[in-house]
Every structure is written in structure tokens, then in C-alpha cells.
Length: 213
Image 1: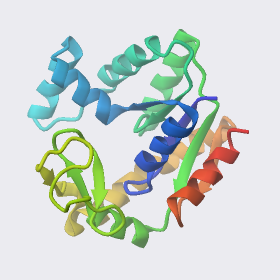
Image 2 (image 1 turned 120 degrees about the horizontal axis):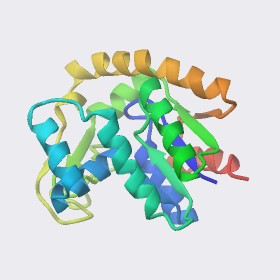
Image 3 (image 1 turned 90 degrees about the vertical axis):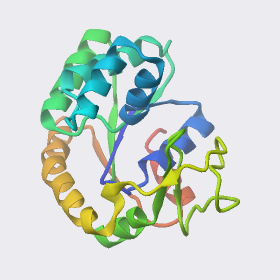
């Protein structure tokens, strides 16, 4: 079964995706990882993406869809989690067209439900490795040695500007405005499943895994 995993910033999508990849050997398809990979490898799509990002612009939906299509071609029947896309109705409609074109199916859209104050606490403590994209939290998941990335050893660990307290409230409000229609879209299709994203990460994972049975 293929899943679309979504939820507000700080809901734990990356953490839960990692569990699914390790436990069920699913493929994690993340738009952020795709952007970084194509830019690093200097592909034609990567050059396009870098051009938009360097100008401070959002990557157009058609470019993102082409990247997702490339990922689908390399699946070879492997189950996957789609993380970070779609984020709007327009993107959801574009994804449905791509699924129809490629014959790939996404059976369930899983939304992680987390109270806003907990999201703020999670986001304000989040730190990211600039080199490999690994994420940490100053309390819940600190660096093992307090300085280097556990994954790649880089010292370039930083706090994203949009994870600073003054930016988080606006960010969550914007997400909610865009996501409510998206939830309604999947609900009408009978694909929406809401999962409690609070508590221990292993407990959250158990809730998600039940949907796969």
C-alpha cells in the first residue's frame, strides 16, 4: 500500500516516514529531498529548481510534478510514502492526473493531528544539518556529541528562519488555510485518515501502521 503523509510543520512526518522506511522498506518520496538531490546532481530539473529558489520564488507545480514522475519511474513496484506533496488543491489535482498517467495508486492520505502549542514547541527546538538535511531537536533528539551531525558528521547545524518563534504562528496559520481544503478534497474521495500525532513517536507509528493492515 502506498501512503500520502501530510500534516502541519512539526507534526512528525519525517520521523514517521523514517519508521516506515526502516520497518516496511518503503520508499520515502520527499519534495525537499528531491529538490536537494537534483540540485546537487545538477540535473536539468535541478538547474530549474535552483533558479527559482535563488530568486526566492516557489518552485512551480509542473516542475515538482515532473520530479515526482521521475521518482515513480524508479520505484520498480516498491511501496512508498509521499511526503510534502501535494500541499494545495491544484497540486492534488496535478498528482491525481500523474497517478492516472503512470498507473500508480495512493490508497490513503494520512493526516497527523497535533495541537498548535505542541507544534510551536517542536518547531522552535528543531535544528537541521545543512549538509545532509537530517533533523534534530534540542530536547527530544539532540546531537549525540552536541556539535556534529549524527548522520554525516557536519558541524553546520542551524535553525531555519521559519522555525524561529516569531515566524511559527504565521507559518501555521498559512498552512491551515491551505490544508483545510486539501483535507476536504481527500475526504470526498474517501482517502482521508486522521491519526493522533501526539505522544511517544513509537506510539504514533503504531497508529499509522494499523492503517496498513
